[in-house]
Length: 106
Image (cartoon, rainbow, N blue to C red):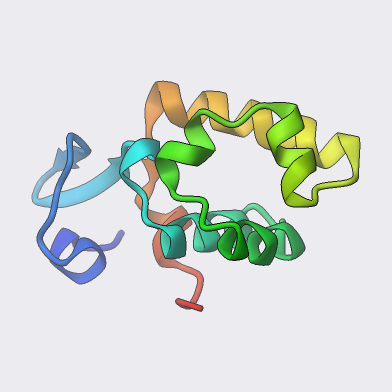
């Protein structure tokens, strides 16, 4: 696990914390760089770069539709569907800290 101060510079926005460790973060609280790392973690590296160029933060990702993903450049329908399903999970349950802390910062 990643300690909050290491990953989020001491900023916690309604995440799940157990024993001083941040386990999840609300999707809407992610920065553009954290969205990039999240998409890379989900093995959507090509999409990650497109989302970073489009300045997608967690709030934008949480509200994204299939058309929004297509407009950003996600051409493969299966990838869009996979990401939309994961977005729903992240909105409901938060983003695991390891999903935005494991990949190197761009």
